Image 1 (cartoon, rainbow, N blue to C red):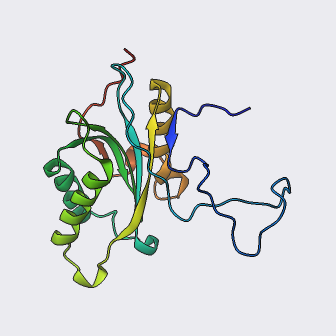
Image 2 (cartoon, rainbow, N blue to C red):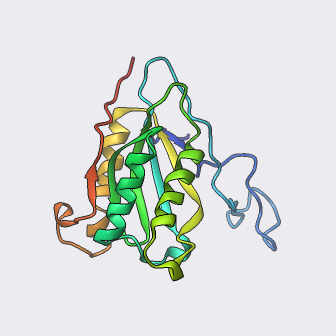
Length: 188
């Protein structure tokens, strides 16, 4: 039985999964593992008047710890504000990745991938340390939330990320977090 975890994920298995070299064999074998070389990005799904909220994770190239500082956080927030086809709600900027919630600001929604490319490009062009470029991992992980409870659950995971990594003792002590826009959940 599969459990509904509140959204469509780019990590959700599908027929495009590949078998790693040397791991061929019976699909019923417990040692048989399927893996994905890149996340699958599903189109945004609008259902009635339900909110569209995406939980997004964007990482730095080779997970270099470049992001959690005042200059970079300012560049990222300014890029989100300028690239306004999607609105950023709550976010946490970690040293090597960003977790954020976003919702479309246009109807129909503009492609998420295009919006991400736009703001990452803006940050890269303004990057003060040219030797650190390229900054971003090629792809990203996205999950469309299906219910308000999953928004609250995911936020608890995100806001506690700096505590889990040992950067702060309390979530509210992490300086690189915030909420640019209130993304309200509507079920109708």
